[in-house]
Image (tube, rainbow, N blue to C red; front, side):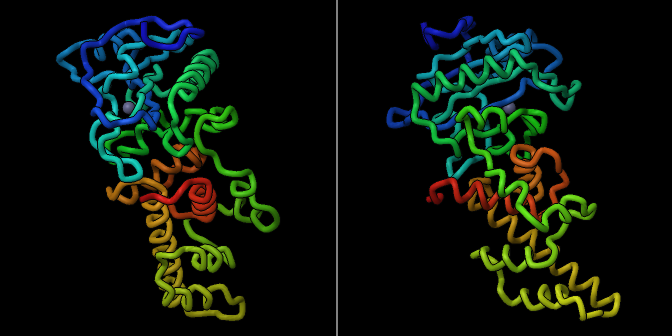
Length: 297
Ligand SMILES: [Zn+2]
């Protein structure tokens, strides 16, 4: 019987799977929410041959774990998309569906016993397979144009605290000194002050000719007329977006709609702010995460 010996797991086989390619290794873990009114309905759908969807596991809100597909087989959960250059995520991954009605049917916080079961399952999976932290992703990370799951209520930080997945250093989230000011700033859509030049200096893909405009707007003595000011601010905004977008590609997101990439990133690593803006904190978090990863090929 497939699955872990220590964990109580209910074998509930689905016909929706295939063979993994002969040369493939399992090195990714994709987390989902079911996005259906009930767990029963999700289980039924994933076992219906007509649906052509499945996952290796499904975890009910009460913490009950079902296994639908053996880990050695290729389940059909990820679909179209990519992560860190891999566009056949199903062949390399294990997929876990976590029961939650999702944004369509009444998105709600995940139950404690459900997350406890998930943590235990993930630890068992990580003990069996060599899955690096940067390969533990949301469905929305590999398919940001189509998917939102498991969503901004999912406790990624809690999982990371137990060695499951990436999380930024506290320093990157709450940098010391002047950043209190940033946190209170209601307009978080753009960089301000020297954070701009720091970020720009660190961004390799950044067009350097634009730093002049930014430095100018930083100078307190310079008082441009409103038209100039608007232009300069717009440059700053656009440049930060370009930096954010290129860092997202560097981190692992695919070349889809940049706004979708930004929101998917925030949903996972900055869930308090899903505006898709290239604000200082989002960029700081992203840079910290990139520093924790090996370079993409
Ligand atoms: Zn999904």
